[in-house]
Every structure is written in C-alpha cells, then in structure tokens.
Image (tube, one colour):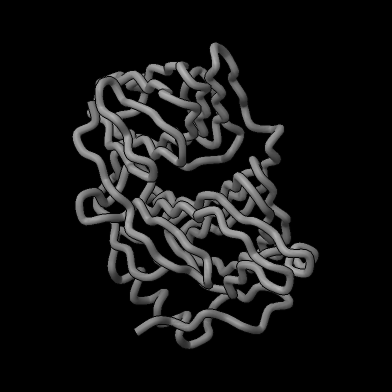
Length: 286
C-alpha cells in the first residue's frame, strides 16, 4: 500500500497548463527525481504554440517525454532536435547549460496538440559540476514489454527486466505503463524509493482506488498490485535516495547553496553559454 497520495499543484508555464507533483512540502524527491511536471493535454490553434525562451540549468538532468505533439529542443551545446511522442530528450546540465523548448514552426503555423511529462533528476554530488551533454533517444530505441494486457516502455534506468539506453548518472527507474481493463501488474521492489503517477483511466493499488493525476508514494520493500479497473495509463519513477539534501532555486539544483548563488549571479550578468541563433531569454526572477 502507498504511504500517502499527493495531489499535484496546478500552474501555467508560458501558457501551457501543468500539474507539478514534485517537489511538494510532503515529498521533496523520489530517488534522484526532484521535479515532475505533467504537461496537460492542450490544443494550440494555428499561429500559436509553446515557446519557452532560453533559460539556464545547473546540477541536474532534464528528461522530456511526450504522449502527443512535438517540441523543438535547442541548447547552448549547439543541439537542435525535434522531440516526438515516445522519444527521450535527455540533457545533463552539470556546471551550466541553457536551452529553448518550443513548438516547431510548421506546427505553430498549422496548430497542434501537446501532452507530456518533464522530469528533473539531481546529479550525484560528484557530478554536479560536470561538463554538460545532450542526447536524443528515438521511441523505437527504448525497451518494450507487452504481455497479458500490460505494455511497459522503459524510459530511463532499469526495471521490469528491462534497461533503457538513456545514459543516467545514478540507478533509477522511469517507466511508461499502459494497462488494458482487467489487467494487473505487480510493482516489484527493485528500487528503495518509488512513486506511481496516474495519468488517466481507473486503477487501484491493492485495495486503494487511485484518483487521476495523483502521485502514490510506495512503501520501500513492498510490491503492491496495480489493477486496471478500466484501461489506464501511468508512469512509475524511483531510485536510491539522494546522496544528501538538494537545494532548488528557480532552474538550479545543487547540494551547496554557493553553487546556486554563483549560477544566479552569472545568469544575471549574462556570463552564460548562449543558445546559437537565440537572442531572447528568461530573466532571473527576484
């Protein structure tokens, strides 16, 4: 049984409605996962789309995973990549990176839909100031298991006898779960900390009914049974506890507040790598 259910808080990012399940007062992290945003299904009419101007990160890896729509990722490393449903967009910020996320120009012209998730994973303390990197992993490169009405796509890490090619920096689990009505899936205790997020549909964990858009924190060592009352869609995240507490300020994550203050000062002064071809940026909040 989960120890508790967390209701994410709603927010609006550049016009995109989101639900933020991490961090919250009741739970600051699940394994290395320190941030979990559900980009709710949104229809953009012709002439519009998501447009998040260049902004900085340190001390973390970002992972974007879409169910619907497309995003253009550009970063200060020179990467430029269209991200489609089922792909993994994986950026490790380390000592510092800037990036842009927006609806591609063709879809801005025609109109589009967007639905997906973005998570942040805190880097181990030994890698917090590593060199930044970016990699893209097409949907067909991710391991897939299908049996008895259960479909598992392993997004990152290890679990369910699968291993993702995404180059994570600490042991973790991130899987996309789709169950047909009546199907069941034991959630093995492969990682010390785990949480299940119900994206849509009807499901139970053992005898507990899961509200849609809820984050269920699982007890360490237990293997609850996920049961689909109707068809359901969920993701599970997990991993070993962080190697010490993390501070979060705006887009910065670090074990040492001095790293965050230095990053804030650098961004405010314009002393930061720039995304090629981009002139606009998000200014440092007060």
